[in-house]
Image (cartoon, rainbow, N blue to C red; front, side, top):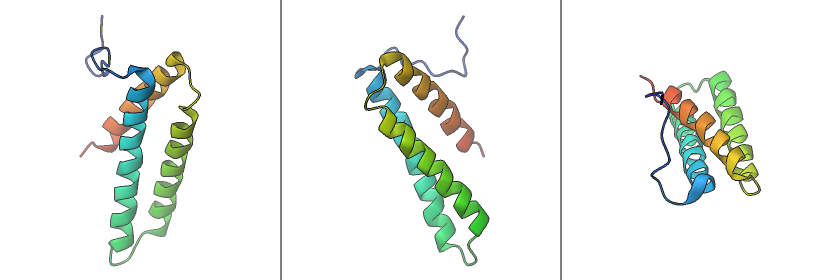
Length: 91
């Protein structure tokens, strides 16, 4: 039985690697947007900025890892980052 909260990528074209790349890119974009917003704040929260930068750096490292990932590893990364993106976008 499929978990309704787990994204199903089976109908998408481009293979697991492309799907994972797209999802990780979305997470990197989320972090970048938050970093920009924090920099523009009247009084930027330096601790939050460091956390955001660390999160973005980790995502960029995983994105680089996708270049050599096999389909199983790409699927695992896609699953992890889909869940992370869902969590980051919670109100």
